[in-house]
Image (cartoon, rainbow, N blue to C red):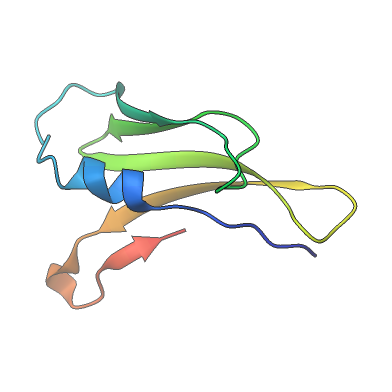
Length: 86
C-alpha cells in the first residue's frame, strides 16, 4: 500500500497569519518538493470559501510506484472535535 510523509508546518504557519477576509482563491504560500517531504509537485496553500486548505500530490514510499492526492484543512475546535483533517 505504501506510505508518505507530510510536513504540516507551512500550513499551520499560514493559519497563524490571521488572514481571514482574503478574497477566494488567494495562494497564501507554496511548498516545493524536497528530500524532507514526499511531494510530487508544488503544493499551494489556498484561502477558499472562508477556510485555509492545502492540496498535496504525494509520492508513495516503500512500493514500486504510486501517488495519492490529499487535501488538509483545519476544522473549528469550538465543537470539541477540532483538529486537522485529511
